Length: 343
Ligand code: PBG
Image (cartoon, rainbow, N blue to C red; front, side):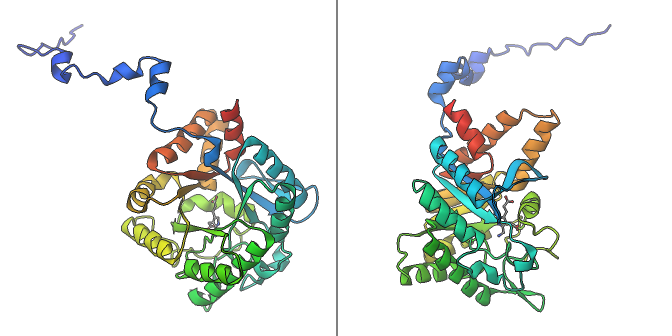
């Protein structure tokens, strides 16, 4: 066999000569030194848990595309909120699956003070006052076409949608929501919601803007969870941001802050870490990522196939959000990771 033996260059330098004796591996040599120099840490205080709510009692419906995630009736949602509070999770975010007969062209059921979301807010506030409740003021679970806005002649009409979303936000605040998180991306929604909350005495209710919400393929499993998958025709490109854009995302965030947003969100999460870092550097505001359903399901599916270590991938992805500059993360992994962090 003719093996090739590389020749050392004449006067070859030693590694210490090459590195000037700087060896980055020194601090990685042991667990104690790695812990000592670790820059970012995930804590239970970073977690917001999105949960799905349905009508009924003792309902716990699995969602095929989201293993270990369920649609819960309000009575069981209270139990999960209690569990979350005990684990130290600061807040939950609620999303409804509304029966089809209640969905219409304008999403009018969002204005019912007794819809399942408002009932859940009241019940959870009553039973678990120490947990924060975040509600989405978007219309998509309430419309017969699955869009986040009012659809007229094939167009999502901006200003009429803003009026509807704003009225919904005030009703959600009256039910006890602590943070209104509008995810619809209509122009002017943040300022309109702020004005309406203040006019109705809800100065203390905060707004988390889904400031940079991208038109994304990663929302697929969520649409099964809230039952919009079969309804939605076309796409959301006339209101969500083109996933190829970054400067536009900064302009959206700037606008929402000028209108009164207290917190910013980037959605989806992991494919958009560059956006998180830009927003944090540019605005120094509380910044959140939504690790969306598709991101969750990819990790669960690969782990179920034995292709990756699901727990490690979960922790790595969540820590990446901290490294990118996030103050917190909306994640379906919240109770799992909270239990791990505790143990
Ligand atoms: C729409 C909305 C979406 C999500 C939450 N609210 C996106 C969509 O259906 O277009 C996605 C959440 C997820 O994927 O986990 N207002």
